[in-house]
Image (cartoon, rainbow, N blue to C red; front, side, top):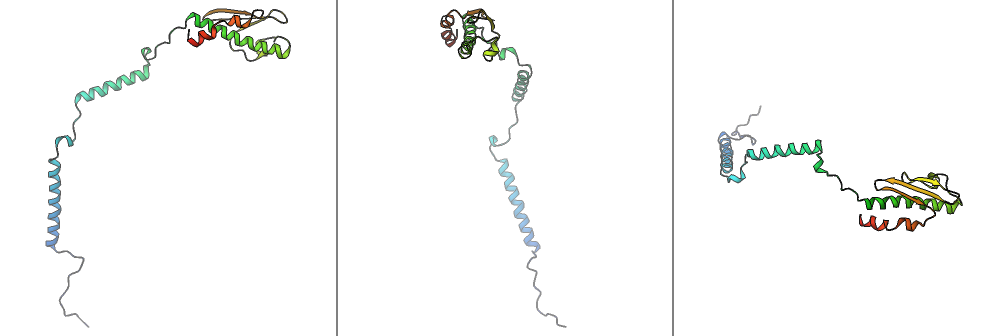
Length: 171
């Protein structure tokens, strides 16, 4: 058999103990330097503790928010101002006017008055309709502004008056 007689070579993948110790020393030295740098950071870079005042404010704000969300206090959503009687009357007149226009269109198209308001179209609100004769009718409406009555023998423009201007101006 053939045996090699030359010197033995070390494996290329093996590292000597001295080299391993040097590498380990370098790693430890690097970690110590990083730890020192962290300690030497200015105080504003370090994590601050939250003050008790901040915690009290946070808890107070949370309780207040929950109160508003759950209770919905009346001061948060005040009632709208009351509608003036002039504006309410103008609104009633507009309701009756719109219903009268539907009836007049029905009379023009059909040649007769409707038997009830639904025959002339969808009634806008609780307007009372009464036929006086074959060509005349009465509309009345009671609401917040009182009671308004229109008889078809009077001109519609005179009944409406300045209601449009009053509504545009808001009373």
